[in-house]
Length: 448
Image 1 (spheres, helix red, strand yellow):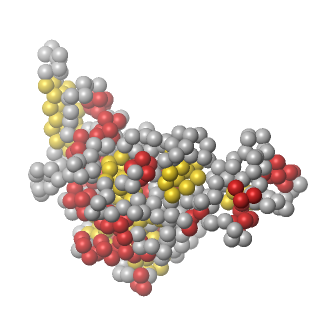
Image 2 (cartoon, helix red, strand yellow):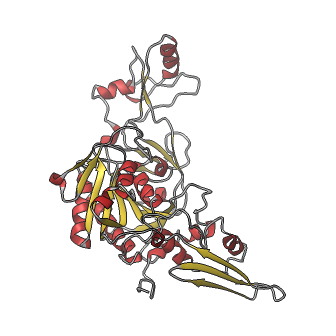
Image 3 (cartoon, helix red, strand yellow):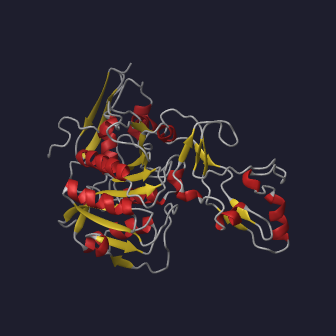
């Protein structure tokens, strides 16, 4: 039987030593981790990098930049889209010029790029021609947000805010995405800014407040304990669960290397003095009946909205309900509109919507297209369906709690993905609700 299992960890590399059956020899797996020390990097001033998807004019972006400069004492480089690029995901601008313009009117080191949030991070972090190279800066951490509107569940695949944070991770920079359930773009999102600042300080402590060690990222030397496709991880995963490695250190290392990042969501009415914080995973949330349709010659929700008879969805704050929802009865609905639209009976003939709005639009759409007329789809209505999943970001926000999730930077199945057992430990919270792996540990941040 297994007699002993020991983990040997160091700053420069990670090794696993497995002592197995008496009649078997010791198996040793030497693993290395990517390091920026393998790439020539000149001395540069450390800084924080800040972007978003709501655009450079966002009051919340300007507020967070000012607070970061004031409370961390670090230089803060702001580079954000010149105009709103919400829901851009990780979209890129290809084969078209993107103008980078300095905006001193919005604060020091502030730049607007005619591109997407991912474009902004790539222009900032490019190892040879990027903005940080031009300004002789080296990133400590990259931040994205605060965003107007939550980014939870499957929204993380659609969000430009999350896309910018993930892009920074791809470049080897520790990163954090921040969002609020408020969609009032006139607000500075003070509570979300405060929560982002607190989490940033905690993350910087975990990083030792040192410049990103894996920027520029070295894509050649990879591996390490806890990586899904590493042989030693497979050996470890097959052991009983009471045989444990230093999983928190594995998560810290992955965060330092940009292989996991943090996703923060803050309820609109949350207050730091009284509100709770939860460490969460991604919840179960999907969209249904999201589109309103305008058909020539027919009264439609989209036409009514354009005439000002309905409330535009993204102007109202997110309303959270825990009832039966609008359709399936399996949880609440996150809705930004007070108008509920009937979805019909499935054969193209609905039962009539509220406020006298027609819902039997399927036949109208088919007839209009057959006649060669255009049909206009508008995704201005937010119709999220949610389900009750314990320890999820969706449920935390519905309860009025701040949600903090640890997400993988890489696509599912990628070589650098962490193992399931490691990521399950990322759900462990400390007494204050913050992720346990981010908590200070004795001797963790001492210089070698």
